[in-house]
Image (tube, rainbow over all chains, first blue to last red; front, side, top):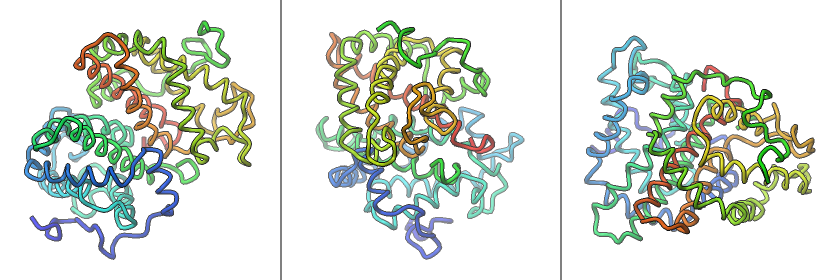
Amino acid sequence: MASDQIPGYTYGTDDIPDAPISMDEFDRLKQTVLFDEEDEEALRRAGDVLEEQIDDVLELWYGFVGDHDFLLYYFTDGEGNPDEEYLERVRERFGQWILDTCDAPYDEEWLNYQFEIGRRHTREKKNQVDDADAVDHIDMRYLVAFIYPITATIRDFLTAGDHTDEEVDEMYHAWFKSIVLQVTLWSYPYVPEENW
Amino acid sequence: MASDQIPGYTYGTDDIPDAPISMDEFDRLKQTVLFDEEDEEALRRAGDVLEEQIDDVLELWYGFVGDHDFLLYYFTDGEGNPDEEYLERVRERFGQWILDTCDAPYDEEWLNYQFEIGRRHTREKKNQVDDADAVDHIDMRYLVAFIYPITATIRDFLTAGDHTDEEVDEMYHAWFKSIVLQVTLWSYPYVPEENW
């Protein structure tokens, strides 16, 4: 699906407010996770490998969520009923997010959209673009904890291309850095500004 | 140094309040990072490998912090003057923390101490056990971002033992899971309870 056809996907549009941090502050976070130009290049190569496997990656991740009631909870009405339409709409954006993680330049537009993704996990904006009636907030502890499964599971998919172990490692580490960087940014709306 | 000689190290003592989450909630977080008994065993093996290298690991990590003013900042008075005594006292506990990450059972006592470590990063308790005059709060974004360097840099040290690549990978993944789990718990005091 062309990305501008994905429901609720608004990366790069005028709907997205400016990030609450400067590009200098963003750069300090990049330095903390050792993220540089070479990682952006490695991620572009990762995108070529993952592009054909998006559905398989999502099946694995959705399977993991579906196997744990306390995770699936965030896609339910809070009384055990999953919202299938919401799950599907999020899935489309989740696939596009994999591609964006790999292909997008890590510039101001990318930064702005990370804060939007953060808000969409919280009471501020969860459910809104999907007009869903699911519980209205994803607890921050699961957002942070998800760094592990979302990172560790990607490595097998990265081996599917025609790359050496060393190149797979470069792609894997670039992905790992990016996930930590993104979750760091997504945590912003959870926290009083002076604590973040 | 025997751990009960380390200034400010109070793991397992009566000074540590009970964790604000139940063991069931703790178990859900473990499940989210796929942490189980095998990881505890792999970490014990990792402890045997790392034990002799604690100073080298700390030198690398302190070097990384020292190379970035915006990270060293949290050990300064906020006006560019690092507090050397504070740096040294934290260093002792940091070394013990590596050993605890590897050797301690991930039980209620361990859980309780994670919340204490969290508080000691924030206005609630930073500087207190060291009677230090450094800035009074570590911004949460750096706590989360540190998951990457603290995880990625450990792998080389794990290869120093007499283990196969597969065993090193098991130790590395157990470490990675534990770091994500710990940072998740440490984030608690930063966030309004209903958001965490």
